Figure 1 (cartoon, one colour):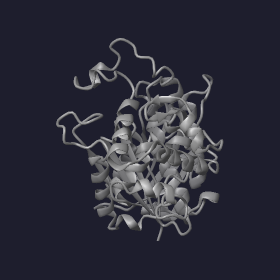
Figure 2 (spheres, helix red, strand yellow):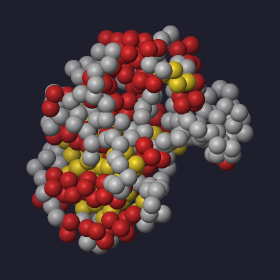
Figure 3 (cartoon, helix red, strand yellow):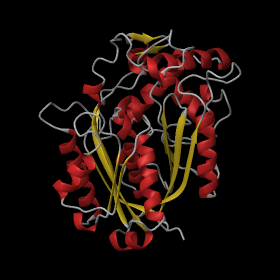
Length: 393
């Protein structure tokens, strides 16, 4: 017998660069305490801790450190890893534990100092990362993913007539939204011209077309429906979960007929989540999409189903994805301006949707938002999860 699951609290830190005097554990504890405060519950109510990978100090034992500091004794605990999708998988695991009755109140959290881990990502060392790349793509790179996304963007330009200006408009939209997000790393206004004149990183991608690795920590408190009704008057329910992993790690290597401008994992995960929620894509009021580079800001809305392939070239220009448009996307600034503490990014996305559905989004509030969608990915859109959330009945 499964149970309905709700989000009843959240907490997060401003995304940015934290000094060496602040540890990932300290950041995690601060985010968890903020979430407990938001939910109005005590640490004694918590019977589950689920987290994203911790690479720097604790060797997979961060859960034990956090449990000791908070003095909680979780009945369930797990550390989940799968690239950038890790936060989504952690959230799914927390949902499942509650649905199956193994826990009643679970804290799903993540804390990473990406600015340190990726400080020298552009420096290629001999042999670094070779073991994770298929031999057919090793000549192109041995570290990083920007080359794959750049290839995808260039192909989209060829197939659908997109230009670098179209990609730049997505960057400007995200930055305009980020100006009203207290947690965003980048809030200085930019123009299309600013994007086009920023340094070329991997053509057609320029500096402002790319998300930046930053530090962050976020925590989300989930509970059973019964507990949720005791805790809050504004529960946000999990209505649908979709997941798909395709047969590649970055660009497809098992055939020449697979597109790099549309992504199987995104399409399949979205369809599964929508079926579970028993809604159509047009029922969604607001969405957070995991687009680490600007061309994917155009591709993902097409793959999820709001637009046919190639239609985003027009839609990005006519305001269809802005607040007040057909489907407001990345109202908190997205990865490009909110910042990208990779494995924790899906949790920040979820918090943004929760705020929208609670009516707490301030100047970027979508009127009447009742259904929200969160998309997250790992690799190059090869591993994907989509969540559908609904405002409480």
